[in-house]
Image 1 (cartoon, rainbow, N blue to C red):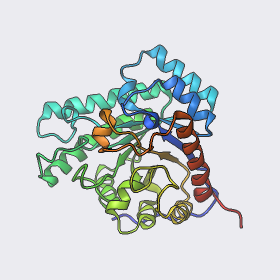
Image 2 (cartoon, one colour):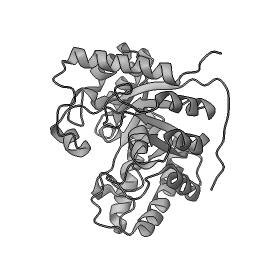
Image 3 (cartoon, rainbow, N blue to C red):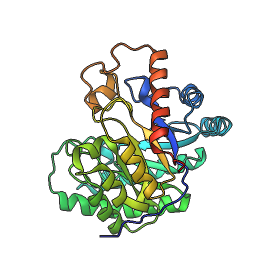
Image 4 (cartoon, one colour):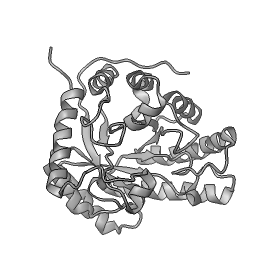
Length: 303
């Protein structure tokens, strides 16, 4: 196992949110959402990567220009369906999955989105119909090796998301993700840790962040019930110190889910309205307050 890399110094984390905060479907108007996210003080808008291959070159160019004008970085998030599983037993499905993710990265290049995140080593959410983890793992490594070459050629970081046992049985911990990345052996293949998932699987969230070290390419944040940071009981100050200890200077993206119903509610398992009937304006205020809180816990503190 690789040694963790601990660096001290001034880092400049970027803060963002997933596009779906205001709804319960995996879709939105990205142009309007980008304007809203920028107005609320965010640095990053995380979009649905699968949507990019359905956009024309003109649409991608327009969104790229808008994001630059707003000072927003665009990151892209994907959880491939079973028919695009790069670790499938079926070689044709693996081939389709590799093409799907490669096409996404080519679209990302046009958008100047340089970070692709998600469960790209198998499919999501997993149905646990195949429990042969060693075989799935091996096929996933081979496919991600191929995808890593595409990512490297386009200057894109592929950040493999570590998720809890109820969503996959392949990468559940930072230690497993590090081993997977070692086997892939590509500098553009990194790790995505998520505080919600770590709260379930890791003995200590801050220790997992330190263990990831310089392989941590992206961080998703949310409370243990998927509400906004600061609305629950996770140790945000301790996590912030761990991030500063490793000199983390990449994306910190909120992934809050409040609304039941729709495909989001089904996939994320939201069975009640966590917003308690909040209006759009109240949801805007909630996420802006959370951003201020998160910055206070994560950003460099003066002595």
